[in-house]
Length: 446
Ligand code: GAP
Image 1 (tube, rainbow, N blue to C red):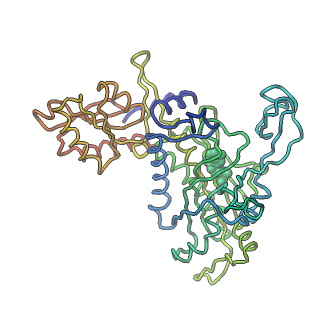
Image 2: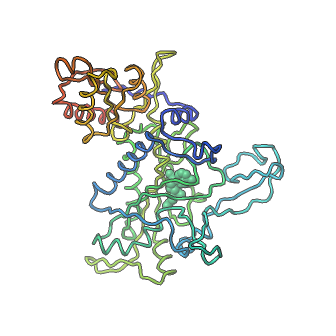
Image 3: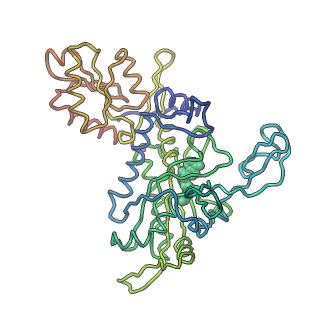
Protein backbone atom coordinates (compact mmCIF):
# COMPACT_ATOMS: atom_id res chain seq x y z
CA UNK A 1 0.00 0.00 0.00
CA UNK A 2 1.36 3.42 -0.96
CA UNK A 3 1.71 5.89 1.85
CA UNK A 4 -0.37 8.98 1.16
CA UNK A 5 1.49 11.66 3.06
CA UNK A 6 0.08 14.60 1.17
CA UNK A 7 1.52 17.90 2.24
CA UNK A 8 -1.22 20.25 1.11
CA UNK A 9 -0.39 23.64 -0.30
CA UNK A 10 -1.37 27.26 -0.79
CA UNK A 11 -3.91 28.58 -3.26
CA UNK A 12 -1.14 30.57 -5.03
CA UNK A 13 0.77 27.35 -5.69
CA UNK A 14 -2.33 25.71 -7.16
CA UNK A 15 -3.08 28.73 -9.35
CA UNK A 16 0.47 28.82 -10.67
CA UNK A 17 0.61 25.04 -11.26
CA UNK A 18 -2.74 25.29 -13.04
CA UNK A 19 -1.43 27.90 -15.43
CA UNK A 20 1.96 26.21 -15.97
CA UNK A 21 0.52 22.80 -16.72
CA UNK A 22 -2.64 23.73 -18.63
CA UNK A 23 -5.31 23.12 -16.00
CA UNK A 24 -6.87 26.60 -15.75
CA UNK A 25 -6.14 29.97 -17.37
CA UNK A 26 -7.43 33.45 -16.62
CA UNK A 27 -10.28 34.23 -19.04
CA UNK A 28 -9.50 36.75 -21.80
CA UNK A 29 -5.89 36.92 -20.65
CA UNK A 30 -4.49 38.65 -23.73
CA UNK A 31 -6.96 41.51 -23.10
CA UNK A 32 -5.81 41.91 -19.50
CA UNK A 33 -8.18 39.23 -18.17
CA UNK A 34 -11.76 39.25 -16.96
CA UNK A 35 -11.88 39.24 -13.20
CA UNK A 36 -12.94 35.97 -11.51
CA UNK A 37 -13.65 34.20 -14.80
CA UNK A 38 -11.57 31.16 -15.73
CA UNK A 39 -10.95 28.88 -18.72
CA UNK A 40 -10.00 25.21 -18.48
CA UNK A 41 -6.98 24.19 -20.56
CA UNK A 42 -6.21 20.79 -22.14
CA UNK A 43 -5.37 19.11 -18.82
CA UNK A 44 -8.01 20.89 -16.73
CA UNK A 45 -10.81 20.03 -19.13
CA UNK A 46 -9.94 16.33 -18.72
CA UNK A 47 -9.93 16.70 -14.92
CA UNK A 48 -13.30 18.44 -14.82
CA UNK A 49 -14.79 16.00 -17.35
CA UNK A 50 -13.62 13.08 -15.20
CA UNK A 51 -15.22 14.66 -12.11
CA UNK A 52 -18.50 15.06 -13.99
CA UNK A 53 -18.28 11.56 -15.50
CA UNK A 54 -17.55 10.00 -12.10
CA UNK A 55 -20.60 11.78 -10.65
CA UNK A 56 -22.86 10.83 -13.58
CA UNK A 57 -21.72 7.20 -13.41
CA UNK A 58 -22.31 6.93 -9.65
CA UNK A 59 -25.48 9.02 -9.68
CA UNK A 60 -27.25 7.91 -12.87
CA UNK A 61 -25.71 4.97 -14.71
CA UNK A 62 -25.11 2.74 -11.69
CA UNK A 63 -28.54 3.35 -10.18
CA UNK A 64 -32.02 2.14 -11.11
CA UNK A 65 -33.79 5.00 -9.40
CA UNK A 66 -32.15 8.06 -11.02
CA UNK A 67 -32.49 9.26 -14.63
CA UNK A 68 -30.81 12.18 -16.33
CA UNK A 69 -31.85 15.21 -18.33
CA UNK A 70 -30.25 18.23 -19.98
CA UNK A 71 -32.34 21.41 -20.11
CA UNK A 72 -31.84 24.81 -21.68
CA UNK A 73 -30.21 27.60 -19.72
CA UNK A 74 -32.92 30.07 -20.74
CA UNK A 75 -36.37 29.31 -19.39
CA UNK A 76 -39.73 31.03 -19.02
CA UNK A 77 -39.26 34.02 -16.68
CA UNK A 78 -42.30 33.01 -14.59
CA UNK A 79 -40.31 30.00 -13.41
CA UNK A 80 -38.06 32.32 -11.39
CA UNK A 81 -41.06 34.17 -9.99
CA UNK A 82 -42.65 30.90 -8.83
CA UNK A 83 -39.40 29.51 -7.44
CA UNK A 84 -38.91 32.60 -5.31
CA UNK A 85 -35.66 33.64 -7.02
CA UNK A 86 -37.01 36.98 -8.29
CA UNK A 87 -37.95 37.99 -4.75
CA UNK A 88 -35.54 36.10 -2.55
CA UNK A 89 -32.35 35.16 -4.42
CA UNK A 90 -30.50 38.10 -2.97
CA UNK A 91 -27.41 38.87 -0.91
CA UNK A 92 -27.05 41.92 1.33
CA UNK A 93 -24.81 44.43 -0.41
CA UNK A 94 -23.00 47.37 1.19
CA UNK A 95 -21.02 50.06 -0.58
CA UNK A 96 -18.05 51.88 0.94
CA UNK A 97 -18.70 55.63 0.95
CA UNK A 98 -14.95 56.27 0.55
CA UNK A 99 -13.69 54.03 -2.29
CA UNK A 100 -17.15 52.89 -3.52
CA UNK A 101 -16.17 49.21 -3.48
CA UNK A 102 -19.08 46.86 -2.88
CA UNK A 103 -19.10 43.93 -0.45
CA UNK A 104 -21.40 41.18 0.76
CA UNK A 105 -22.38 42.41 4.19
CA UNK A 106 -22.75 38.93 5.69
CA UNK A 107 -19.17 37.98 4.73
CA UNK A 108 -17.51 41.08 6.19
CA UNK A 109 -15.41 41.02 9.33
CA UNK A 110 -15.69 44.36 11.07
CA UNK A 111 -17.74 47.49 10.34
CA UNK A 112 -15.35 49.33 8.05
CA UNK A 113 -14.19 48.87 4.46
CA UNK A 114 -11.32 46.31 4.25
CA UNK A 115 -9.93 48.26 1.29
CA UNK A 116 -9.75 51.84 2.61
CA UNK A 117 -11.19 51.76 6.14
CA UNK A 118 -14.14 53.95 5.04
CA UNK A 119 -17.69 53.75 6.40
CA UNK A 120 -20.43 51.78 4.66
CA UNK A 121 -23.76 53.12 3.43
CA UNK A 122 -27.08 51.39 4.22
CA UNK A 123 -27.20 47.71 3.15
CA UNK A 124 -29.57 46.76 0.34
CA UNK A 125 -30.66 43.40 -1.09
CA UNK A 126 -28.96 42.66 -4.41
CA UNK A 127 -30.52 40.04 -6.72
CA UNK A 128 -27.88 37.63 -8.07
CA UNK A 129 -29.66 36.65 -11.28
CA UNK A 130 -28.20 37.81 -14.60
CA UNK A 131 -30.81 39.32 -16.91
CA UNK A 132 -30.80 39.32 -20.67
CA UNK A 133 -33.35 39.78 -23.48
CA UNK A 134 -34.97 37.10 -25.60
CA UNK A 135 -35.28 38.25 -29.21
CA UNK A 136 -34.44 41.56 -30.86
CA UNK A 137 -36.48 43.91 -28.65
CA UNK A 138 -34.82 45.06 -25.44
CA UNK A 139 -37.87 45.85 -23.34
CA UNK A 140 -39.16 44.54 -20.05
CA UNK A 141 -41.49 42.05 -21.74
CA UNK A 142 -38.45 40.31 -23.28
CA UNK A 143 -36.46 39.91 -20.06
CA UNK A 144 -35.22 36.39 -19.35
CA UNK A 145 -32.69 35.17 -16.80
CA UNK A 146 -29.59 33.02 -17.06
CA UNK A 147 -30.49 30.21 -14.70
CA UNK A 148 -28.91 30.55 -11.24
CA UNK A 149 -29.39 26.82 -10.55
CA UNK A 150 -30.11 23.79 -12.73
CA UNK A 151 -32.74 22.48 -10.30
CA UNK A 152 -35.77 24.45 -11.57
CA UNK A 153 -35.55 22.86 -15.02
CA UNK A 154 -35.94 19.51 -13.30
CA UNK A 155 -39.03 20.59 -11.34
CA UNK A 156 -40.80 21.99 -14.37
CA UNK A 157 -40.03 18.78 -16.31
CA UNK A 158 -41.07 16.49 -13.44
CA UNK A 159 -44.19 15.23 -15.20
CA UNK A 160 -42.51 14.81 -18.62
CA UNK A 161 -39.68 12.79 -17.14
CA UNK A 162 -41.83 10.74 -14.78
CA UNK A 163 -44.31 9.67 -17.44
CA UNK A 164 -41.71 8.95 -20.16
CA UNK A 165 -39.30 7.09 -17.87
CA UNK A 166 -42.19 5.32 -16.06
CA UNK A 167 -40.30 5.71 -12.78
CA UNK A 168 -42.18 5.21 -9.55
CA UNK A 169 -41.56 7.27 -6.47
CA UNK A 170 -38.99 7.34 -4.91
CA UNK A 171 -36.83 8.30 -7.87
CA UNK A 172 -34.51 11.10 -8.90
CA UNK A 173 -33.69 13.31 -11.89
CA UNK A 174 -30.08 14.42 -12.33
CA UNK A 175 -28.58 17.16 -14.44
CA UNK A 176 -25.16 18.68 -15.07
CA UNK A 177 -24.96 22.15 -16.56
CA UNK A 178 -23.94 25.77 -16.37
CA UNK A 179 -25.44 28.17 -13.87
CA UNK A 180 -24.84 31.89 -13.47
CA UNK A 181 -24.87 34.15 -10.42
CA UNK A 182 -23.82 37.76 -10.34
CA UNK A 183 -21.88 37.19 -7.11
CA UNK A 184 -20.98 40.38 -5.23
CA UNK A 185 -17.64 38.99 -4.12
CA UNK A 186 -16.42 36.11 -6.27
CA UNK A 187 -12.97 34.78 -5.45
CA UNK A 188 -10.61 32.05 -4.34
CA UNK A 189 -9.80 31.00 -7.91
CA UNK A 190 -12.54 28.74 -9.32
CA UNK A 191 -14.28 28.38 -5.94
CA UNK A 192 -16.75 31.23 -6.32
CA UNK A 193 -17.33 32.52 -9.83
CA UNK A 194 -20.16 34.13 -11.75
CA UNK A 195 -20.38 31.37 -14.35
CA UNK A 196 -19.99 27.81 -13.09
CA UNK A 197 -21.21 24.28 -13.59
CA UNK A 198 -23.50 22.42 -11.23
CA UNK A 199 -24.23 18.72 -10.75
CA UNK A 200 -27.65 18.49 -9.15
CA UNK A 201 -30.11 15.71 -8.48
CA UNK A 202 -33.71 16.14 -7.30
CA UNK A 203 -34.96 13.04 -5.47
CA UNK A 204 -38.76 12.82 -5.37
CA UNK A 205 -40.13 10.90 -2.42
CA UNK A 206 -43.27 10.41 -0.37
CA UNK A 207 -43.84 13.03 2.35
CA UNK A 208 -42.81 11.52 5.67
CA UNK A 209 -39.87 9.63 4.12
CA UNK A 210 -37.96 12.86 3.33
CA UNK A 211 -35.87 13.00 6.52
CA UNK A 212 -34.58 9.49 5.91
CA UNK A 213 -33.70 10.31 2.31
CA UNK A 214 -31.97 13.50 3.42
CA UNK A 215 -29.76 11.41 5.70
CA UNK A 216 -29.19 8.89 2.90
CA UNK A 217 -28.04 11.53 0.35
CA UNK A 218 -25.77 13.24 2.88
CA UNK A 219 -23.97 9.92 3.41
CA UNK A 220 -23.94 9.19 -0.32
CA UNK A 221 -22.20 12.49 -0.98
CA UNK A 222 -19.46 11.82 1.56
CA UNK A 223 -18.88 8.37 0.05
CA UNK A 224 -18.74 9.87 -3.47
CA UNK A 225 -15.80 12.05 -2.47
CA UNK A 226 -13.89 9.51 -0.38
CA UNK A 227 -14.33 6.70 -2.91
CA UNK A 228 -12.75 8.98 -5.51
CA UNK A 229 -9.73 9.74 -3.39
CA UNK A 230 -10.51 12.71 -1.14
CA UNK A 231 -9.21 12.03 2.36
CA UNK A 232 -12.06 11.64 4.84
CA UNK A 233 -10.29 13.76 7.47
CA UNK A 234 -10.44 16.70 5.03
CA UNK A 235 -14.24 16.45 4.74
CA UNK A 236 -17.06 17.13 7.14
CA UNK A 237 -20.83 17.57 7.14
CA UNK A 238 -22.20 20.76 8.67
CA UNK A 239 -25.90 21.36 9.27
CA UNK A 240 -27.17 24.82 8.36
CA UNK A 241 -28.30 27.05 11.20
CA UNK A 242 -31.97 28.10 10.81
CA UNK A 243 -30.96 31.61 9.67
CA UNK A 244 -28.73 30.21 6.87
CA UNK A 245 -31.38 28.01 5.27
CA UNK A 246 -32.23 28.85 1.66
CA UNK A 247 -35.80 30.08 1.21
CA UNK A 248 -36.99 26.69 -0.13
CA UNK A 249 -35.41 24.45 2.48
CA UNK A 250 -36.64 22.72 5.62
CA UNK A 251 -33.12 21.40 6.41
CA UNK A 252 -29.78 21.72 4.63
CA UNK A 253 -26.29 20.39 5.27
CA UNK A 254 -23.04 21.29 3.56
CA UNK A 255 -20.28 18.88 2.71
CA UNK A 256 -17.26 21.00 3.58
CA UNK A 257 -13.64 20.52 2.52
CA UNK A 258 -10.54 22.10 4.06
CA UNK A 259 -9.50 24.29 1.15
CA UNK A 260 -6.16 26.11 1.44
CA UNK A 261 -8.04 29.02 3.11
CA UNK A 262 -9.97 26.79 5.55
CA UNK A 263 -13.21 24.81 5.76
CA UNK A 264 -15.65 25.83 3.02
CA UNK A 265 -18.71 24.55 1.18
CA UNK A 266 -18.31 21.91 -1.49
CA UNK A 267 -21.90 20.73 -1.80
CA UNK A 268 -25.28 21.39 -0.19
CA UNK A 269 -27.82 18.66 0.45
CA UNK A 270 -31.27 20.15 1.10
CA UNK A 271 -34.70 18.94 1.99
CA UNK A 272 -36.73 21.15 -0.36
CA UNK A 273 -40.06 19.67 0.79
CA UNK A 274 -42.88 20.15 -1.76
CA UNK A 275 -42.04 23.86 -2.05
CA UNK A 276 -41.02 23.88 -5.72
CA UNK A 277 -43.61 21.49 -7.18
CA UNK A 278 -46.42 23.28 -5.36
CA UNK A 279 -45.13 26.70 -6.42
CA UNK A 280 -44.94 25.67 -10.10
CA UNK A 281 -48.33 23.95 -9.96
CA UNK A 282 -49.88 27.14 -8.61
CA UNK A 283 -48.17 29.51 -11.05
CA UNK A 284 -48.56 27.35 -14.18
CA UNK A 285 -52.00 25.92 -13.36
CA UNK A 286 -50.71 22.38 -14.10
CA UNK A 287 -51.25 19.60 -11.59
CA UNK A 288 -47.81 18.31 -10.50
CA UNK A 289 -49.04 15.73 -8.00
CA UNK A 290 -48.25 12.02 -8.26
CA UNK A 291 -50.61 9.07 -8.03
CA UNK A 292 -49.19 6.13 -6.15
CA UNK A 293 -51.05 3.18 -7.64
CA UNK A 294 -49.97 0.71 -4.99
CA UNK A 295 -51.22 2.80 -2.11
CA UNK A 296 -54.02 4.26 -4.26
CA UNK A 297 -53.29 7.75 -3.10
CA UNK A 298 -52.28 11.05 -4.65
CA UNK A 299 -49.70 13.43 -3.16
CA UNK A 300 -47.24 16.16 -4.08
CA UNK A 301 -43.80 14.57 -3.68
CA UNK A 302 -41.18 15.96 -1.32
CA UNK A 303 -37.73 16.58 -2.80
CA UNK A 304 -34.26 15.95 -1.41
CA UNK A 305 -31.49 17.61 -3.39
CA UNK A 306 -27.73 16.97 -3.42
CA UNK A 307 -26.33 20.05 -5.25
CA UNK A 308 -22.65 20.19 -6.09
CA UNK A 309 -20.47 22.55 -8.09
CA UNK A 310 -18.33 20.79 -10.70
CA UNK A 311 -15.69 23.53 -10.57
CA UNK A 312 -15.54 23.46 -6.78
CA UNK A 313 -15.32 19.69 -6.79
CA UNK A 314 -12.50 19.79 -9.38
CA UNK A 315 -10.67 22.36 -7.22
CA UNK A 316 -11.05 20.15 -4.15
CA UNK A 317 -9.72 17.13 -6.06
CA UNK A 318 -6.77 19.23 -7.24
CA UNK A 319 -6.01 20.62 -3.78
CA UNK A 320 -6.35 17.22 -2.16
CA UNK A 321 -4.08 15.49 -4.67
CA UNK A 322 -1.23 18.00 -4.31
CA UNK A 323 1.93 16.62 -2.76
CA UNK A 324 5.62 17.53 -2.60
CA UNK A 325 8.56 15.25 -1.93
CA UNK A 326 12.26 16.02 -1.40
CA UNK A 327 13.91 19.41 -1.46
CA UNK A 328 15.84 21.80 -3.68
CA UNK A 329 16.58 20.38 -7.10
CA UNK A 330 15.35 16.94 -5.96
CA UNK A 331 11.93 18.33 -5.14
CA UNK A 332 9.12 16.37 -6.81
CA UNK A 333 5.64 17.84 -7.13
CA UNK A 334 3.10 15.09 -7.63
CA UNK A 335 -0.67 15.12 -7.89
CA UNK A 336 -1.87 11.87 -6.36
CA UNK A 337 -5.24 11.75 -8.11
CA UNK A 338 -7.46 8.69 -7.97
CA UNK A 339 -7.03 7.01 -11.40
CA UNK A 340 -10.63 7.83 -12.42
CA UNK A 341 -10.10 11.53 -11.66
CA UNK A 342 -6.55 11.92 -13.08
CA UNK A 343 -6.65 13.88 -16.36
CA UNK A 344 -4.66 11.14 -18.11
CA UNK A 345 -4.31 7.59 -16.88
CA UNK A 346 -1.24 6.66 -18.91
CA UNK A 347 1.58 8.47 -20.71
CA UNK A 348 3.65 6.78 -23.42
CA UNK A 349 7.21 8.08 -23.44
CA UNK A 350 9.78 6.96 -26.01
CA UNK A 351 13.23 7.22 -24.42
CA UNK A 352 14.07 9.80 -27.07
CA UNK A 353 12.85 10.97 -30.47
CA UNK A 354 15.21 8.51 -32.16
CA UNK A 355 13.73 7.23 -35.44
CA UNK A 356 14.16 3.62 -34.35
CA UNK A 357 11.99 4.15 -31.27
CA UNK A 358 9.15 6.21 -32.69
CA UNK A 359 7.23 3.54 -34.71
CA UNK A 360 7.13 1.17 -31.71
CA UNK A 361 6.20 3.96 -29.32
CA UNK A 362 3.34 5.02 -31.63
CA UNK A 363 2.20 1.38 -31.86
CA UNK A 364 2.14 1.12 -28.04
CA UNK A 365 0.21 4.40 -27.91
CA UNK A 366 -2.34 3.00 -30.40
CA UNK A 367 -2.67 -0.19 -28.33
CA UNK A 368 -3.54 1.81 -25.20
CA UNK A 369 -5.65 4.69 -26.49
CA UNK A 370 -8.90 2.80 -26.98
CA UNK A 371 -8.77 1.64 -23.35
CA UNK A 372 -7.26 4.49 -21.33
CA UNK A 373 -6.99 8.25 -21.63
CA UNK A 374 -3.41 8.23 -22.86
CA UNK A 375 -0.92 10.99 -23.62
CA UNK A 376 2.06 10.69 -25.96
CA UNK A 377 4.99 12.79 -24.80
CA UNK A 378 8.38 12.88 -26.51
CA UNK A 379 9.72 16.37 -25.84
CA UNK A 380 12.71 17.01 -23.52
CA UNK A 381 14.62 14.50 -21.41
CA UNK A 382 12.90 11.44 -19.98
CA UNK A 383 13.52 12.74 -16.41
CA UNK A 384 11.74 15.99 -17.18
CA UNK A 385 8.88 14.13 -18.79
CA UNK A 386 8.42 11.97 -15.68
CA UNK A 387 8.33 15.16 -13.59
CA UNK A 388 5.79 16.73 -15.95
CA UNK A 389 3.53 13.67 -15.78
CA UNK A 390 3.85 13.66 -11.96
CA UNK A 391 2.78 17.31 -11.93
CA UNK A 392 -0.39 16.55 -13.87
CA UNK A 393 -0.99 13.41 -11.83
CA UNK A 394 -0.67 10.70 -14.52
CA UNK A 395 -0.71 7.42 -12.56
CA UNK A 396 1.41 5.37 -14.99
CA UNK A 397 4.16 6.13 -17.52
CA UNK A 398 5.10 3.56 -20.16
CA UNK A 399 8.63 3.90 -21.52
CA UNK A 400 9.77 2.51 -24.83
CA UNK A 401 13.55 2.00 -25.08
CA UNK A 402 16.06 0.37 -27.43
CA UNK A 403 15.62 -2.99 -25.73
CA UNK A 404 11.93 -2.84 -26.62
CA UNK A 405 12.75 -2.43 -30.28
CA UNK A 406 15.83 -4.60 -30.59
CA UNK A 407 15.25 -7.32 -28.09
CA UNK A 408 12.10 -8.14 -26.11
CA UNK A 409 9.09 -6.09 -27.31
CA UNK A 410 8.59 -5.24 -23.63
CA UNK A 411 8.16 -1.80 -22.03
CA UNK A 412 8.70 -0.31 -18.59
CA UNK A 413 5.72 0.80 -16.50
CA UNK A 414 6.59 3.44 -13.91
CA UNK A 415 4.22 4.01 -11.01
CA UNK A 416 3.63 7.70 -10.08
CA UNK A 417 3.33 7.07 -6.34
CA UNK A 418 5.99 4.45 -5.63
CA UNK A 419 8.21 5.30 -8.64
CA UNK A 420 8.72 1.55 -8.98
CA UNK A 421 9.31 0.26 -12.48
CA UNK A 422 8.30 -3.10 -13.91
CA UNK A 423 9.00 -4.54 -17.32
CA UNK A 424 6.00 -5.94 -19.18
CA UNK A 425 5.66 -7.48 -22.69
CA UNK A 426 3.59 -5.24 -24.97
CA UNK A 427 1.24 -8.20 -25.46
CA UNK A 428 0.32 -8.07 -21.74
CA UNK A 429 0.42 -4.30 -21.38
CA UNK A 430 -3.29 -3.56 -21.32
CA UNK A 431 -3.93 -6.12 -18.56
CA UNK A 432 -0.87 -5.01 -16.57
CA UNK A 433 -2.04 -1.40 -16.69
CA UNK A 434 -5.56 -2.35 -15.69
CA UNK A 435 -4.19 -4.27 -12.69
CA UNK A 436 -1.94 -1.41 -11.58
CA UNK A 437 -4.74 1.13 -11.92
CA UNK A 438 -6.98 -1.12 -9.81
CA UNK A 439 -4.35 -1.24 -7.09
CA UNK A 440 -4.01 2.53 -7.21
CA UNK A 441 -7.80 2.88 -7.00
CA UNK A 442 -7.81 0.83 -3.80
CA UNK A 443 -4.86 2.77 -2.43
CA UNK A 444 -6.51 6.12 -2.97
CA UNK A 445 -9.79 5.44 -1.16
CA UNK A 446 -10.06 8.40 1.19
N1 GAP B 1 -30.11 24.05 -6.31
C1 GAP B 1 -29.54 24.38 -5.04
C2 GAP B 1 -28.35 25.19 -5.16
O1 GAP B 1 -28.03 25.72 -6.20
P1 GAP B 1 -26.39 26.15 -3.74
O2 GAP B 1 -25.88 25.74 -2.39
O3 GAP B 1 -26.68 27.59 -3.97
O4 GAP B 1 -27.67 25.25 -3.99
C3 GAP B 1 -25.02 24.31 -4.93
O5 GAP B 1 -25.38 25.67 -4.84
C4 GAP B 1 -23.54 24.17 -5.20
O6 GAP B 1 -23.20 24.88 -6.40
C5 GAP B 1 -22.63 24.77 -4.12
O7 GAP B 1 -22.44 23.90 -3.04
C6 GAP B 1 -21.36 24.99 -4.91
O8 GAP B 1 -20.62 23.79 -5.01
C7 GAP B 1 -21.88 25.38 -6.28
N2 GAP B 1 -21.88 26.84 -6.41
C8 GAP B 1 -22.83 27.71 -5.99
N3 GAP B 1 -22.48 28.98 -6.28
C9 GAP B 1 -21.28 28.92 -6.91
C10 GAP B 1 -20.41 29.90 -7.46
N4 GAP B 1 -20.70 31.20 -7.46
N5 GAP B 1 -19.25 29.48 -8.02
C11 GAP B 1 -18.94 28.16 -8.07
N6 GAP B 1 -19.73 27.19 -7.56
C12 GAP B 1 -20.90 27.55 -6.99
